[in-house]
Amino acid sequence: MDTEQVKKLIKDGRARPEGEYQVFGVLVPLIDVEGGCRVLLETRASTLKKQPGEISLPGGRKEEDETPLGAAIRETSEELNIPEEAVSVFGPLDYLVTPFNYIIYPFVGEIKRPYVDRIKGAPDEVDEVFTVPLDFFLKTKPECYRVATKLQIPRGFPFELIPKGEGYNWSSGTYQVCFYCYNGRIIWGITARILKNLAHRLTDNEQRA
Image (tube, rainbow, N blue to C red; front, side, top):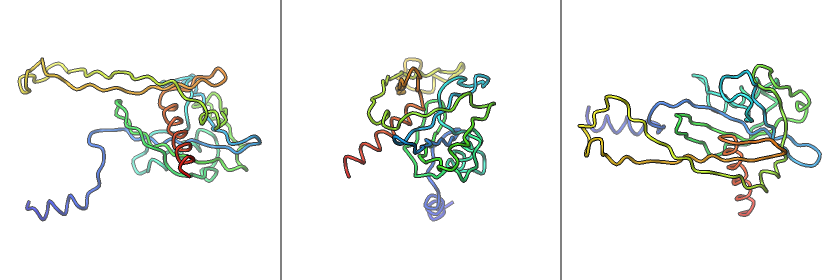
């Protein structure tokens, strides 16, 4: 291989996260009602293996030949029992890269008015569907905490190959965990991070306008 071949391969390539990640698409669904815009949220089914009973946004893992946006729309359709054409997407929020090897792409959109009354949570995935005024997130600062992440060195790691061996000074990091409390409901974790980002984007852009 010569430099021209390297140049072509690098120039025509696409940057992506290095490593193995699961990719998810999530939708922040908005509904226009009397009194203003509301955010639709779900309580996850108590029978689910992961995060049962927790509050989340519709979304899920990207399938092989699917985009994150496609996953967000498909999962919203499946979880709320509405057709995909019921969703009108406005655009993306900032994506999240977690220490758990997840990359989460959130999008904001609306459920078109004719379909709002047809929303019904899929019983195998959703125990309850409810809404929160968008203004709540615009006016409420979440409680956020920095949780330290810790390296777990596997047995058999070749310490002899690195400076200072077992005494090597590894870098450490933190992961932000946020909480909203609305009428006794706890909205936390990645869902809260996404809604916090939405509020920041809306208020920041409004101040610039």
